[in-house]
Image (cartoon, rainbow, N blue to C red):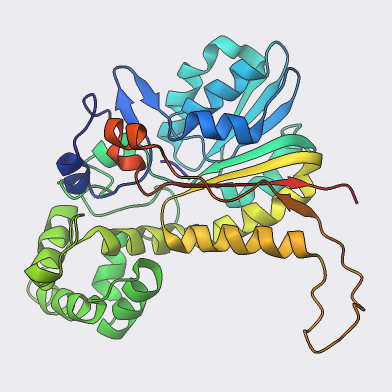
Length: 337
């Protein structure tokens, strides 16, 4: 679920300060999609094919898919962020009715796609990273330098902002959240410091939270990225129920793809990638009988075929767009029943 422009070729220091290593950079007036060549090779769009980009973001991948599926291929683009839909509609205007855009979370693709005329498609793509537009929007709270309210919602008309979670959750609850969704080794210390700080004044902006986390992590234990990266990740995942949406989107692919149709997913941290990897492995295996049963009695057949090992960005792409460095691409193909 990708979510205002940055200057050309952002350096790693800028990326760390922005709050995430995820997603595309901005080059000039356009969006630089991550691993675009690898995505296109794995998705393999052809003239006349139907595709879903379930995390539209800057529409960089969507534009490439529509070009490759010319002259009559169509694409359904989804994004929970209304600003992303507005930007993408301008970028994809030249494709006319071939580009169909809907504001929706990618976890809703099973309901939205058939209603939009995409009940059976040749490809379903998900890029789970943040876009540079979202990181640069100071009113959203995704980036460490954001001076506005700590919100982090992709769709600001739904759910609770991150500042509300920080204001109401106990130290134990925050510890569990940072540990589960951020895999943060200092989650307990950070949670206790947040509770102590909010007793004096609310932790209401991204800058305040980033500074508080930085003070909580011992200098010798700091990584190459900003100390608050994992905490911001955890809050964003919780606020938007990103892992639940991912599981729903993956499950929907089994019904939306036609035989031979391809699922392609770009993830940016281990929690997402683990879900995708396990989903493909499970659907490729078929039988789900307990190991102690010597002969299959469930009758479940394999529904997907893995398209090979995961792929990562080239060194050249990482140099040009440091935010791509944690990306991992996986693909699978639906097999005939």
